[in-house]
Length: 115
Image 1 (cartoon, rainbow, N blue to C red):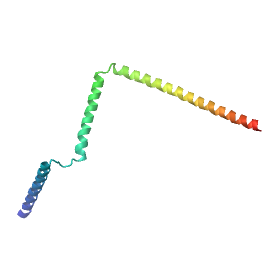
Image 2: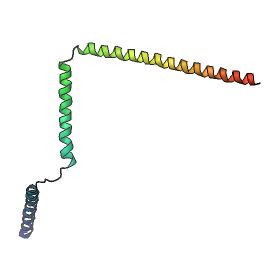
Image 3: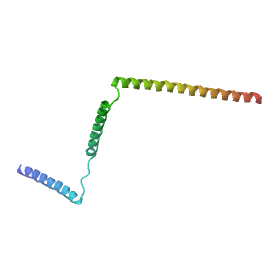
Image 4: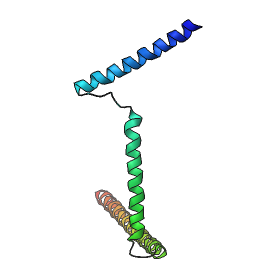
């Protein structure tokens, strides 16, 4: 049993020494160990989330109108855009139908004159 614990202690000491020597060597060369993706991405996500929270808080603090009024204005703007879009779509459909009808009458008119 003593041999087993002695070998475990020796293994841990060698591992610690090796890790320390790798860090020391890299430090002397002006390098460092490569960071994992999680060590890079997680701080960025934290900063991004904090930025969103600060932006939302500032938006609420400096909003020129109350929330109900802003939502009502947005709703009316969206309804206006929707109505204008539908009107424009109907105009385009009507124009396409008129052009289709004029082409059809032109082609049938040339066929009858040829006969």
